[in-house]
Image 1 (cartoon, one colour):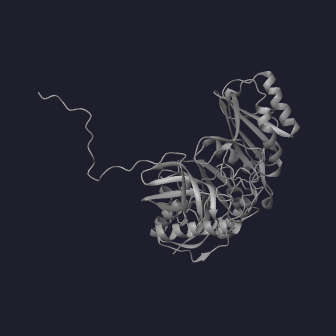
Image 2: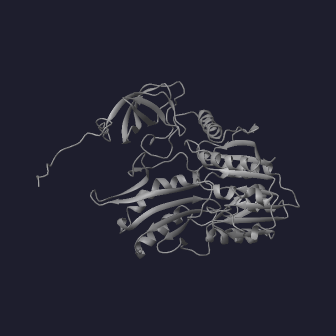
Image 3: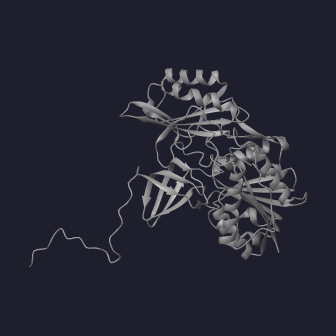
Length: 450
């Protein structure tokens, strides 16, 4: 038997494979246009570059964050020729923190970008345009965020605790002493948080910190080992100074140190108080959330004798205002603890025409007991994956009107295809500017049966 020849390398039929571009490499680029997520797009030597912090028409120096195939992801390091639209970044951490990727655009241009993103998805994927475009729902572009998760990590090599937000395009943590998008009550907590955490005896056992400002201010600490009495005293003193509740998340669910304290948020136009616990889903922008609920009620036009379905109901953000206007609200949510919390919220607000059910809404609607009587109208607010399996059966429920609140225009457009197939018309659509300074798009669409 012939001895095998080792070390031979065979060239694939398509020619030699292009060498990958190393992370950290800097490249001068001319930006052709903006992508749907607000990044600049450039083309060089057969590759497509997506550049955070760049605008159409600019010449920039970009640093590579990652590359795969012919796609390169990068961030702007230097601008040689600036667009007329560019403004100075309002935040000192711009370009390093991964949170606010389009703050170099004026706010009105951010809204225009988001409007284009929604229109493009509906046109390209669903082949439709709403009969009417609604004006963007927007509020202040800074000081709006009432909830934030702060990353905490012990660097064993450097023997220091890192506290801040994730960096753009990596798992690195950018130290943050001030965040312009946080609501004012959370600003002093954010600035003093790193120094306080560094005083704790087991920094390597600390997880994230969650901040929340609603009917009260709360600080939640995730920890992977029991806290010492001294550490607990430090945390309690910090929260007392800031007039904040202290919540701890070790094993099991997050718990308040003082069980008698209440935490939640108000929906002021409807005189509603909703209980909330750290870890629950809540809209971070209180002002736009209230405007969103008001617009959803206006578009859905619920009548006093109607039975309305609220899918992905969460804490009851839509269900409770709806219950003030209709005969009955049936609300469905996938997470059992949220179903229980929503039911408690209805009871505490003296709303007894609501029924809450747990259901897996990623699966087709089965012959559920709550669905048998049908509905006049449906409101749904699904996660980013959308609600394809749900919308496939909506026509069978008899609903003539449907309001779809979306946090992902791509899945809204995909689900629109199915709704149109079932005989619904896209009457109205518009963006919800829930996250100013980011390219994240939320939207609302009204469908009516033909």
